[in-house]
Image (cartoon, rainbow over all chains, first blue to last red; front, side):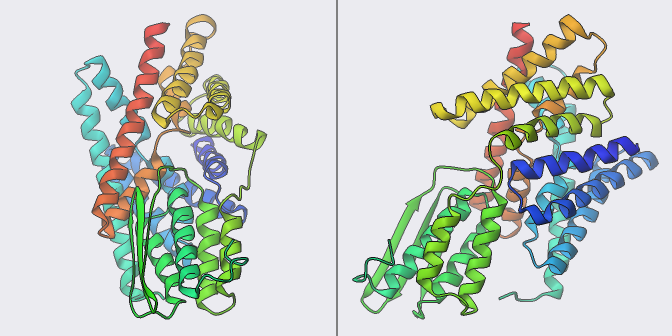
Length: 140
Length: 256
């Protein structure tokens, strides 16, 4: 499990190179991703439901990105995009399309999983964005 | 350009600056509301009564009601990449402009410079493909050999992209072929050298550099902000990329 979390940190930092994140924010973005993935794994131990794992860890990641953005005076997406990356259902999207091509009977299962994870992440981002907008009525 | 041409009115320069900023941000993959916000902040500099920046996922229109008449510009934006550094820098320029620390001519030349800025080039960019593939496999629980195979597969993907990008293929084809070469490497290793590897983890790790996680997150935030057209078109983009990836992997299984 330690290895998985360390892997998440380095993977997120490597991804930051690909999307050209400003150099000075890379470590913070990596930490966001790492903590998010750690929460995902912890919640997964308690109950094996991917949508709940994704929801809770996306809530943590979104809250953390908003706080970091306020503290470091940088756009929220600087931390949100790399941070959310480990839990984005890339694997499920791919399995879905692959099952579609193969005419596999698992198509609906994977489709279901993808939509559930995507919906949970969206819900978490919506929720945290709205909460932080309450405190900051108008940014100019 | 704006500095040399003295005959241009201030409003005209403001409109051109806003358009350039908006175009650069949209190509860099910013959320629609952030692009509109930045453009409006630049347009405010002209002190004109009314101005509008209307941004879609594939184009920009702006109107500025100046004293000498309406200025209207529109621009089609066909390219889509991700470059957060440019978004960040332009955001800083527009804030400096509205705080009065910079005048519009400085801002124009500054944005012109930002348009082509890159932090990482060549080897490091290629290595990031290897890093992403290798450590995503590790993150998903692959053992040492899985990670190494994923790293090599990521390298194959990076080399393919490096070779094919100068030819100017469209992104669907480019994604498909680079996934194909990645999957061929992975499946080839499984078939001829290391039958014990977990091919599922290796392939999911290997496709991670291309899987549209960034576009997906941006699409979500666009939808929340009420930019439904941009949200839907970015969601469609996610689907198209995922389909290209799946076709690439399926072809590799068919070939080997």
